[in-house]
Image (cartoon, rainbow, N blue to C red; front, side, top):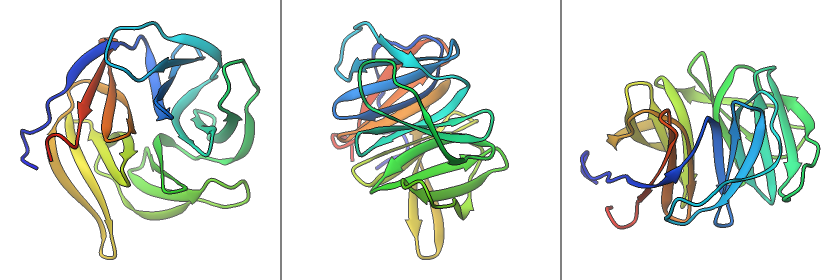
Length: 204
């Protein structure tokens, strides 16, 4: 994959998004108004639907029909993926987490001190540090591959190896504030309230 191969396509709006995740052809977003929104992940500017609250959420992930949220109070919360306003359940700490994603049954996160963490989705397990970040602002995963956006607007492929975390720059990600991955695609919400999509498989 060449460094200039990333071709983002505008597919809609994403107003005031703080965190975003994806599961089962659906995008979920937490906004600065502490609301949880959902929309189908198709190309086209369709409306988001509010499905509940997401108070002080700074990062989100989805797996096993559940949403996970890290909050500014350093808590990790979980709720079922349903279209009505369900309560969140606190399951553990999530200290200084700025971004989070799910892959292969695990949660991956980067904290504000640039540490890279992993934990199982179960309630009773602690986070384990597996390396360092590089000023990451957003993580996403699709097809068992991690991706990251950094503060300098770069998009990276993140490879977990026996020798540590390897970072490969693959393109640009201008003004991205939240990212999600699903079915060989990356979705990005930007600071100017737009929603973008990149189909990875077509350009690898």
